[in-house]
Image (cartoon, rainbow, N blue to C red; front, side):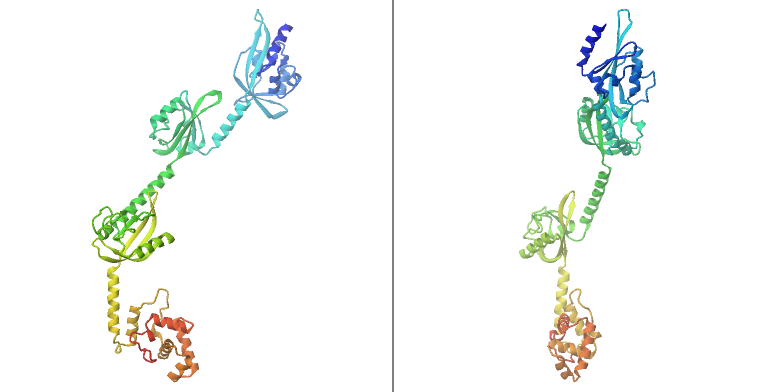
Length: 500
């Protein structure tokens, strides 16, 4: 018997599996080095001399089960002669619960020729690394906000689902777990459904593709889905499905489409000639009806039409310098507002136009939106009006001062942002001072000519400054020039007293 025990110990001593030998009287007669290491001890007496001591020293819990009762303990099962295998337990010393091992154990029972029990053995493997990795996967899977689902390939049933998938679809957990792929089809309306289903059955990677899920919360949910083959505990082959919600992207695409449709309608219905130009050579990619009616259709190549280009077309721009200045301004400022240019229409007539340009993005491409307003009639009217005013003012001695000033303002309107005080608000003396200043006379010279004291002239001068909104003599001259007063009057009358 002793020889047999010695031989058995020699056999198991070098095994990578841990082996604990138990005698029929429940004493622990031997444990190989692997078994001691798996319990974190160095000698047999630290493991326990008897089964009772072993049970006091080490706490065993079945994986994912409640604490083991006396009859459930693997050693108790072994003592009854029960044969079991692949039982996974979590083990820790009662004094050090923080250090734990995961053991997969099986039982061995030896008997003599008469069937009497001669020896018992617990054979164990340390699977701690594997279960730690699986625990990390579980934690990551549950915590990952990205929707995910695990499908077992053997029967195509879902064995794991995270909260992200439940939030995405509106399913409850029990509506998913245990159900089959046929019941919850993750590849409905997928771009390459046949390929995806084929790879699912083969257990191969499913490349990401757009798909539509039938979900309880909505009639359908558009997603990007991909499949990755993995192995679960026990070596089960599974497919990990991951998802990305396309709802926000689809809404953005719909809004962009509606926006572009509105732009297209406004573009075509606009009465102002408008063209979409490229950003480099300014080739026309599209023009509206008003543009085609005035300048011709870029798609046609008839004589006198715009041809294939707009801003870069010699037949459109009358002056090359204007064309170059427009392109330079657009490049430097990024946009152009109210650029005065002379352009040729489809009949070859020269038009005065205001050209405005602004960058726009359509279907992901950048263009320049260019509008051309014909101001030929307005310019002609202004020219004719100025000519008529100059003709009338050539002999304006019988006009009142107010009428002359209004005509002068029509011919030479003040620049934007300049003071707008009217000459009618000035007193007779202030007007005399205004004419004297325009001639370049000093205060003393004006006082002598008007027969006034120097202090009186200066008082009138201060009042003049305040009314027209200036504070120096040079500004008075500019103010008068802008209104055609004094030496700048159309009849050349500069004598004080003749202003009104």
